[in-house]
Amino acid sequence: MNWKDSNTTLQILKNAENGKYGVLATIAYTLDHVIAMVQAAENKRSPLIIQFFPWAITHSKGNLIKAAKVVAENASVPVALHLDHCQNEEIVKFAASELPFDSIMVDMSHYEKEENLRKTKDLVKFCNDHRKATEAEPGRIEGGEDGIMDTEELEGILTTPDEADLFLQAGIDILSPAIGNFHGDYPPAGPQLRFELLEALESYTRARDVRLCLHGTNDFTPKLLQDNIDRGVSKINVNKLVLDTHLEFFQKNANRISLTTLFDDSNKILVERMEYWIEQCRSAGRAK
Image (cartoon, rainbow, N blue to C red; front, side, top):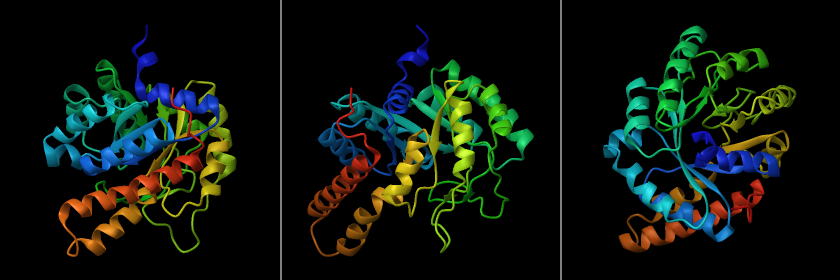
């Protein structure tokens, strides 16, 4: 059997694409985040992808990822671990060879197209040799988030089917297109997405057994999220969308209540927020 047939990330996303629902891919910064996110997924009987920025590796020498794997393996629903926006070639290799990720985003989008493609192809092969599925970002999604390089000064480049084909030939499993989405907070006008481009990419990637991922979901409404799912997106990257109320509570109460109460109560808020967006993605009750 091909190792990809048993890869947790790819199994989760293929089931989602076939079932016409999305799966949250949530950024976690702490083990408490991981525990709360898995609890929400179990409560709603939903598959889940937990993501980490490379910071989580350098901050903990990889131990946060190892601890998260224990939580994922003991969950009663499918939970995959994904390394998001890895922009350092040595960290990609370390994560692929030494850490229990199911998938890795090889993000060389801060290079010009030819260099991006060359580096991506080499790193995809390395990841595949270590049985890690891969994601890449053709084009360039503008903006920045806490933990990844800011591309605000670089020109945003939309992803066309021709552009996507170059990365599909590199062997990626998940495509993260630039369709007007934006890392971080959106300008006052809000998200302005090119759905005609997404529809063309969906037809192209589905025929080649590649999944679609949506980045840049800050400020999304449930309807806008569902509009993307309806057009074939199965992996829904979220950060602020699920962590905002948890962090607001944490900041407001850090000096007011005991530390254990602070953790317990803020995590309850995170679980509730997670459950809400799981429902919006239509993945509740879909765990297999």
